[in-house]
Image 1 (tube, rainbow, N blue to C red):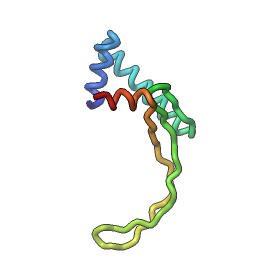
Image 2 (image 1 turned 90 degrees about the horizontal axis):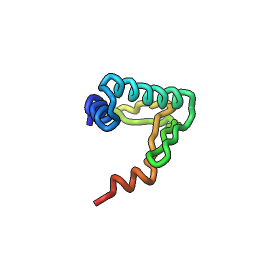
Image 3 (image 1 turned 45 degrees about the horizontal axis):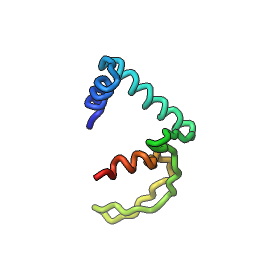
Image 4 (image 1 turned 90 degrees about the vertical axis):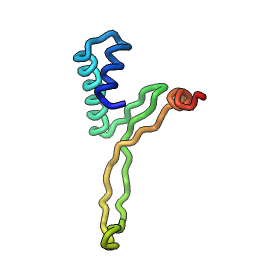
Length: 92
């Protein structure tokens, strides 16, 4: 499912216009992004948790030249699925 398809589903299930659904989705994604930029966790009970994790610096290898490449430490976004989401996906 891509963003346009998600907007269509939100509009259908919520009884909104596509324009309203697009604004709502944009507001949710912007809010999550803003919180992660500040280093905050975003927990949606039953769905999951978005958080920022630290990735350590490492030395990788260029697969073409086999030369070592220094990869600096960085912060990366991470998502951990909640129990209700895990159970919904695992239905048989």
